[in-house]
Amino acid sequence: MTFYAPFCLPFIIGAVFMFAVVATKWLVWLWHLPRADKMAILRGVPTRATFGAIGEVVGESLLHRRIFRIDPLLGYMHMSLAFGWFLLIAVGWIETVAHLGFRYVPLQGHVFFKYFATGLEHKPAFDFVMDLLLLFVLSGVTLAWSKRFYSKAMGMHRTTKHVLGDRIALSALWFIFPARLAAESATCALYGGGSFLTATFGGWMHDRIGMPALADIESAAWWFYSSCLGLFFVAMPFSRYMHIFTEVPLIFLRRYRVRSGEKASSFDRFQMEACSRCGICIDPCQLQSVLGVDDVQSVYFLRDRRYKMLRPEVADNCLMCGRCATRCPVGIDLNTLRLNSRDRLRNLPDKRRYAYLDQVDRSQGTGKVGYFAGCMTLLTPRILTAMERIFTTAHEDVWWADRDGGVCCGRPLKLSGETDAARKMMRYNTELFRKHGIRTLVTSCPICLKVFREDYELQGIEILHHSEYILRLLQSGRLSVGRSDNRFTYHDPCELGRGSGIYDQPRAVIEAIGTLLEPTQTRENAPCCGSSVANTAISDGQQLAIARSVTAELEATGAETIVTACPLCKKALGRGTSHEVRDLAEIVAANIRE
Image 1: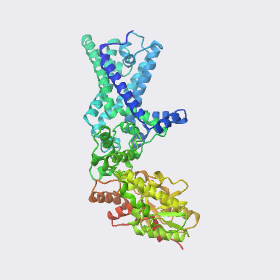
Image 2: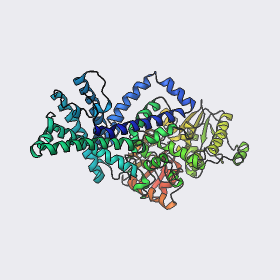
Image 3: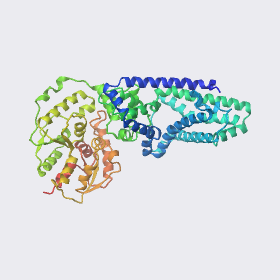
Image 4: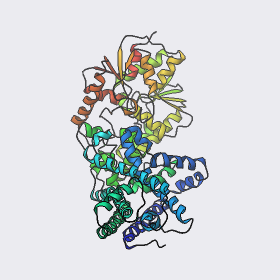
């Protein structure tokens, strides 16, 4: 039995081309990884991380569990295409072995086995399973077609705007499986076999079409099927579908603790090209839902960076609130990629700009508990006053890092892309904390908290947000508050919640004082206040529009007071509502029981 016919040529050429391009990309990206990342991979391979990666590949690349959690119908669509195609390949290989044993069969022999196996004895069990799997995949194709016209049925209000290359690959993919059904059905019409799907269509064709015409239709159908596969394979490495071959190594590399950083690296290529441009990140973006800005979302940022056409107005126009990252089914580190893009576009180190730092030390006090207000808290003095009362009531001896002014934590500069300048500030503050010998560092600013925990080297110093510190005082009995009938609603700051994973502590403090009423979008899904220091593109009026959309939802809870735990959020939300907006520390200080 030979396994070649002229119609196989488009498939063979496309497959060889695709594997050559994909292999070249992988090798180049891996070769240019920093040495530390290469060593992390070598150390990680013989560990349980490899088995964890295999499980994640099955769970996410094939079964798409994250997408199922977003919307079951959308998850089924993705799973039927990915897992269904995988099963067609796997069961098709098993079918070939069942017929021919373990003799060598070229790739096209497996893919077009129904064409080449007409002289072999039919195995009804395999015919049934292969028809069932083909129907499974076709159901996903049908849903994909319908999604282009009515995405709301799958929980998506907006879908991605595709570039030409994506449209070519998408069109080829949509026709692959209908073409397979037509080709196998035509062969069944001529030679028999098949099961409930292909035999039914084949029987219909046999009864209505003459044999000479049917032979021509069969030839054309197999040519069309092979051509669709070949076209898809040629387009795939340069389209959104490169994610099929990139998500798998990305999962393994992440399990081996390879990460993107504030400076661009070749690992970023794995992340960028693992994006399938599914568009799930679009709906959560408030720039789109509130302001109607629809060309800067993560899907378009990654696309533009991948094709080397990223503009500053796209890189800069992001709140970096993390709402899209929590929904990304691939788990791409979107904020870090945005950050190191800004670093490449804007970072202009100047050693003279921060020479004055060595002479700055306006700190006060001698306690082992340090308090770092941060720029925004200094601009919101009621929070500072409230924290002073809390410290005094708890009899805490405090070292005040910046009550009379000091040096910024550095995160705003880092978020803007000036990472080298930000590092100078970080080094200065680190030396300041070490110099004064503090053991615990408390801050009221989630922006400061995140940079202290992630970018500073403060081993031996416990870093706490004031919500964590206040809850500890309440639980230890060092601070007592009176409970009232007040009804509060709470807004999760981006950097505190999604950024630092602190959700329960502020709520526990509020519930010790009054009744907490949750808004519709809360915790991981909480909206940004709109005044993020990460966005340098939107206007003051646009920031206010976002704030009003957020406060409208908070007001709908019926609470008298809006509480947040971030000085920047307090200022932003306060502009968008007539309701009282207070920081967590303020309501605690107002309800202290002496």
